[in-house]
Amino acid sequence: MLELKNINKKFGSKVIFDNFNLAINAGEVVAIAGPSGGGKTTLLRMLAGLETIDSGQVIFDDEVIGLDELITRNFLGFVFQDFQLFPHMTVLENLTLSPVKTMGMSKEAAVLKAEKLLTNLEVIEQKNAYPYSLSGGQKQRVALARAMMIDPKIIGYDEPTSALDPALRDQVANLILENKSLGITQIVVTHDMAFATKIADTIIKVNSKTKD
Ligand SMILES: Nc1ncnc2c1ncn2[C@@H]1O[C@H](COP(=O)(O)OP(=O)(O)OP(=O)(O)O)[C@@H](O)[C@H]1O
Image (cartoon, rainbow, N blue to C red; front, side, top):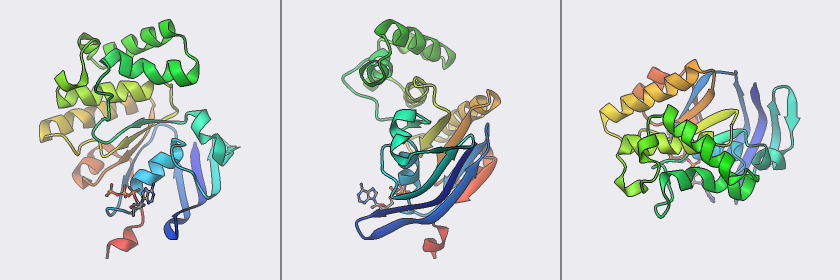
């Protein structure tokens, strides 16, 4: 489904990826593990088009995707570390802002879609609440709903359990497994190997050789 071939990425003179390869099958949950600073977040950001790729090939369903097209193709919905909800906006506004502002979705369509996702994720009662008033698990669900607003082919999570206690970690694992049962392809960046083992079909270690 998604294949990365010979991906190179540098920040200044610092090499983050040197001919990196990755293949992900549709419906698979892939955990990306590896040392701090190894480039896990950068990998997700590159796939979401939030960070440039210097060179290499991205192939999606047998189609070679221009490296500058990643941002507009919306392959990857991003669930940011610590959720990164806009604090001055309600849950509903957090979900509808970007689709309306940057993707030309009508306000009405965005609200309908947001309400459906919030219902599915059992946080519809919080639609007019502000992020500060939500529990950690509710914030996680809202962040997931926001990522799903763009109908991404893949959902990427950056350290989804880092801010959560063990019970909430299990909830996140269940959410990811529920999405898997719906056939959604997911990439999960995590330090937490127990969590990775629980959710992932495949665990990929990025730049693990730099660990030693
Ligand atoms: N915008 C940037 N400009 C310069 N260097 C950056 C930038 N973003 C990341 N880096 C550097 O690239 C390297 C990889 O960072 P990244 O955040 O992808 O690592 P990570 O594996 O996610 O680490 P962690 O597990 O600590 O979150 C780090 O050395 C980081 O300092």
